[in-house]
Image (cartoon, helix red, strand yellow):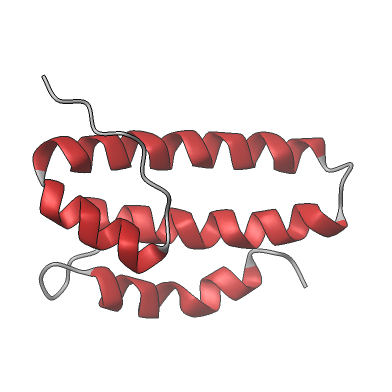
Length: 98
């Protein structure tokens, strides 16, 4: 069983839970929620397979992508950003006010 199989089973539920409108599969909220699930699964996999260097690199790339999406969401919809980070239990950085 691969670490990604559990993600494939939950993907539809994650999309429905975080969609803004019906049929919404690509909004920022959905993308962040899907990346968060993949990150959790891969982190669990790397806990048992410590020498999986390609997996570690993939985890770093996914974390960077999620960080960029969160930064965009913080800039455009701060209240939605707060709600999503609370819902997914993601730590928030300090807000940069310009």
